Image (cartoon, rainbow, N blue to C red; front, side, top):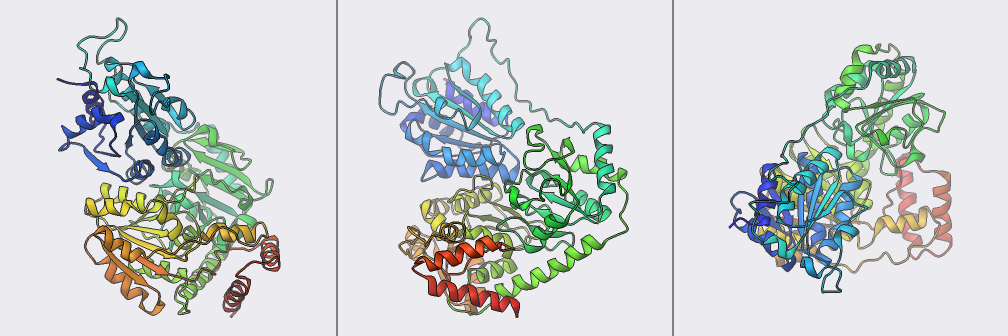
Length: 582
């Protein structure tokens, strides 16, 4: 007998779905049976928490460009998906969430786990529906997959448990013709109108100091961006999700922007008279040129993003690579290279500073040392998944990405606990590539049972934990942005190397910078899943590339108001600034 759940899974297969991340539950037993019968065709990855499944689906979409799919039971199981689904929504990733629901004739009767998940998911999902019977499944599944892929967002189907095991119909309602829908995904290949392209070219040709800000929408347009930068004499500044649009040591880039960015990038933004935004909705407006300072053009797939962060004169709604290719013949090569050359000189000095900080032998060990050593040893095709917090700063600045590597993090959502789950999805998608999670102890401990998932499936993921026993980002925000002493941020220490062994994996500990490189090399070459806990200085600040007077004032105020670790923090900050000046 073919069931409604069989129709669901077969339709997903026709859309090219090869893996589903989820956790079994009695609200999805019919779907689980359909997966069991097809376990040689579609892979089910069992997680320890549904939040992980949603993060994995998001990361799978980010790293492959394919549809990510997660599955959870009714009630609490479905609710647990929300954080990872918002990560997908806010970073524009195609994800399908499938949840169970109560028996259809007991919905809204105060029964156990009677939660209307289709109502709960109204904000997160661009397509959101409830299965109304077996004849309903094929059409809505096709529509859900198409919507997620076409609109780069989350689709949701909630499936009452009794419908899941019902026989697939041989007929349907009078107006519902069986097999009326199809699994065809049509892509738009349109270019902006010629008039807008010419207006954009005129602005770029007129500009004396042109800057390019590239984000995740520019991934895959490396060659075109380099040609653009060469033609315009324009530095490429990168939003975090665009870290791999060009390699970090590429001569045209000044690196990242924002609190986790570089000083050269910030100064490019402050000095440019023309800004070209390519595939980015960079959310921190205070780091962009002041309105009126620069004439601006924006390239984005989504019309709603045009002019969202900065007043632009021309919006070009299309694919970044194809739009740049159309623009290039219309641009004049700038003979004055001084703006680019000045940025290149500053960037070289910045990298010298990063190397100095990344090779320090101070004890306690600096977190920058671990990131720098890791960056040197990663394979040329490594996939690096970072977490949110101070760890984002260390990864963004001190792990220079190379051509062929991939990097991601929870971007606009900036959620903790994404690093390990992202790495699992990456390893599932690319079993032959080196996949590394670079995480903080705060983020890792939120979903640390997923290390057992790595062991269960023998995923050779390497997890580097920067262990400072504190919620570092929150601590520094309390001090630097508010002028308050830190409160509620200290963490109870955990022996993560012992935890790794308890789960059946391998664990290493580093606390000496002189041994950091050797231990990382050993860990990276160890078969199977590995945790490396790197015990670091908890008083090392993740200051922005350019510290404002207000930030310095707030830190001073915090220390004066009774910051419990004020003497150690003051000595660390003073030592860092003295070394920088020397």
